Image (cartoon, rainbow, N blue to C red; front, top):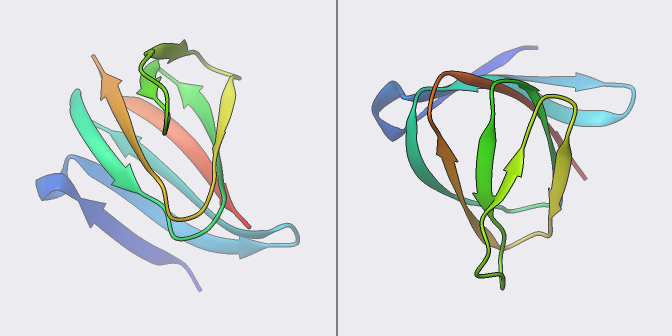
Length: 93
């Protein structure tokens, strides 16, 4: 079953699904700044566009481009900035 998710007044939208490797979402973010919380371990892949990310316990913003990925542990918060529509794949464990 495909689920739909919408956050930040519709500025972030994703479709959730289950594959052989587990739960995932694929989505798009509008330009903006966002803070996300995790409930499980997440690996986020940038598909198109660019994300500038501040990971938990880190004061440095890091740019991620298409093909790049980053990991966030469960029960953490992280911040994301995007300057144009950016697509992503997020895998949960």
